[in-house]
Length: 214
Image (cartoon, rainbow, N blue to C red; front, side):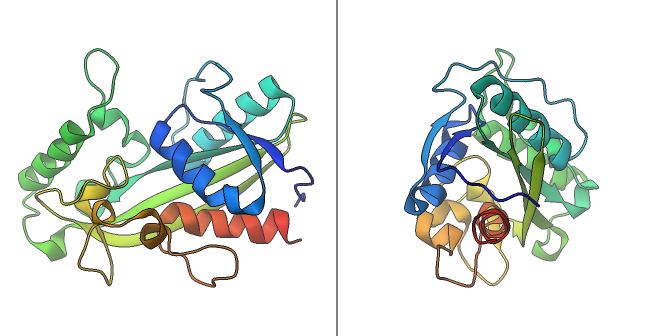
């Protein structure tokens, strides 16, 4: 375990929604953060088959390019009835022919796959959002933090807040989707609060407890 001793880091992402969420979570801690997109870093090929592998690839690429610690996130929607798909390929399911991402199309693809699998009832649409954060240093040292939140896939999509597949994910114990929650409701956590709701907030809570409070 290594403690993070600087308040200047790189957010190793080119995903605007993800960058915004990470900055929302680290901002209250006094961090100064620029994203890999801001710094015009090339996006590394995500060749891993697990969230941990892909998060590590992204964090190390930015840490070495910037010469300072970098924090990455690899996350996705894991659906039981689809054998864990789309999983690490969640973003790929939303990829269009021209390389851009259309998450409305991705959500439709998930819905059609569930219909084809015969998973039409709520109890057959069990799913979880997974987030793995990787904190990497330029010397190659890494720390990994995993967060998961259980729930189910709903149809049609509900809500315009959040990003990605948020409008079709209803977390367990709630009657609204992530897409219907504001940032504070979705994350359900900040410094001083014991609980966290979203997968990313749960991973981030572990990052804080391990690398900032050690």
